[in-house]
Length: 215
Image 1 (spheres, rainbow, N blue to C red):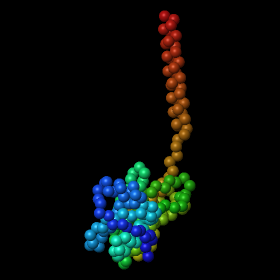
Image 2 (cartoon, rainbow, N blue to C red; image 1 turned 90 degrees about the vertical axis):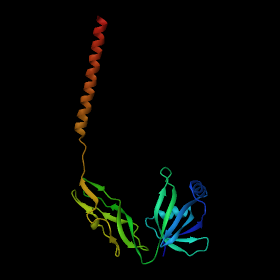
Image 3 (cartoon, rainbow, N blue to C red; image 1 turned 135 degrees about the horizontal axis):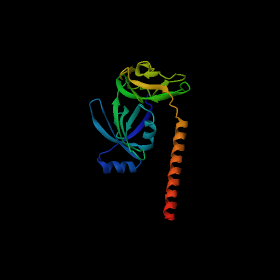
């Protein structure tokens, strides 16, 4: 069963001008392709599409208003406007039940490492092979209580049954290091030295001015 259902209206206008008109009408231009068929250009409801794509690798049921057969698809490429963060275009690839496809799954770090440590997430996604209709939305990596010096590699991320790792098993996902402390005393000493130097310079300048006046 699909996670979301989107109604697709076929479109026969292309180019930047046509795309702008579609977006002004509250819709998003998209193309549906895959499994040997010709690409089909459609428009999707803007709000419904935005809500669906908030979920990584969501399985979408695409129903066309032209009466053609419904298809299952996932978003393969989503173009985002960099300032307003609006969706400008979506590529949807058709999938079939039972087939496996490669996808990038977001990695979320949870928990608090040991006191005095700093957690650095090196990779935000992990490439895996999974059933097209059962794609993971995210992987969780728990760093609770882990000490400095530990790290988590790709093959240490817990994967659901039926999901295979595609990424390099030695790929560094999370690194835990000692927290770097700021040397506040040194900073304070430097600030004091700078202030003293400024005061001395001011006093010297004042003395020179007084000498000039006496001459």
